[in-house]
Length: 193
Ligand code: AP5
Ligand code: MG
Image (cartoon, protein in one colour):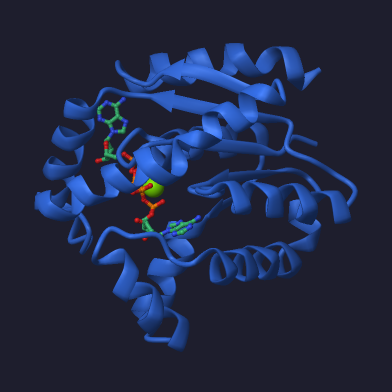
């Protein structure tokens, strides 16, 4: 069983590399961003609340997102037992502490954190480019800049949080998708055994 966190700034390739990791390791993919966008699409009460934050590039409050994550884990108990890739969660120290608790209660833990490291200009270029096609409401230049600011202030401290626990695997996230994935596999080979 392998529980991974895929970590990095907006546009660093978390979703892209998650797809590869899912097929390689047979993991359950939990992207909190995807869960929230699904609620928005379905017009649920949670979706209406989440949209107010997402469209401004701000984080949805910790309490709300932690409850959502616990619910997704409970709804997918059997698959979660085989290992999970957490994409876009945790994003704050309280979320990381909650993840330790939620996995601990289920008799497991985070085995590794894959940190995709990409320079700021490349992140902006990727997201602006995607914004022209994706229709994602937060892929416009003003919101992209806000998302990056929020990442630096609230999320990047998690790098140290996981380094202290010996879990952080730094990956250079620029280059071809295949080359980056090969680096990730190499970094995970040691803990896979
Ligand atoms: P979320 O959905 O998690 O978005 P994000 O972190 O802003 O990141 P993206 O999904 O845009 O990027 P990614 O790293 O997945 O990269 P991707 O593979 O798509 O969160 C959205 C919002 O939801 C947040 O702002 C917040 O409001 C809310 N939210 C979500 N989780 C939350 C939480 N835990 N707490 C509070 N709020 C939360 O790639 C990006 C682009 O680059 C794509 O076009 C891709 O094709 C391209 N690309 C990928 N790899 C490469 C490569 N190697 N070379 C060139 N291009 C590449
Ligand atoms: Mg994503």
